Image (tube, rainbow, N blue to C red; front, side, top):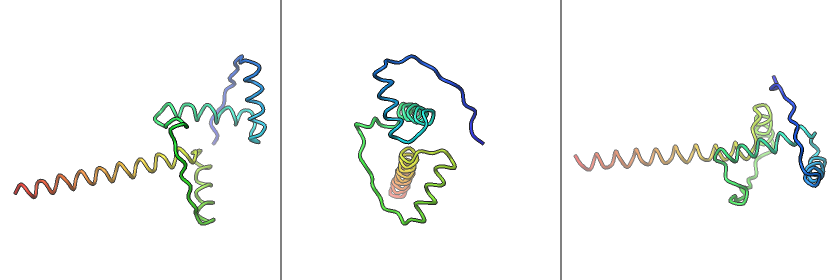
Length: 113
């Protein structure tokens, strides 16, 4: 079930309006979809995502079936690829770091005996 929506209206400079409308039309999205994406990306960046100027591109090739399954999963759960993959990598790295810390602690305890 889709989340309820509300109208957001704001006066912006005409030049900015022209830019937004041009980019929105080029994206092929409705104005609502485009503005929702911009605002979502903005607030996700405020929650720990790095600004675009501090990013690097990660390109991977997947077999077609896996890509389609992944794409459907993201759409069904309303995830953005960038945020999902970034969070997945963070989680795996944190788990690996915790495991290393646990192993180092166990080795130190064994050495002390």
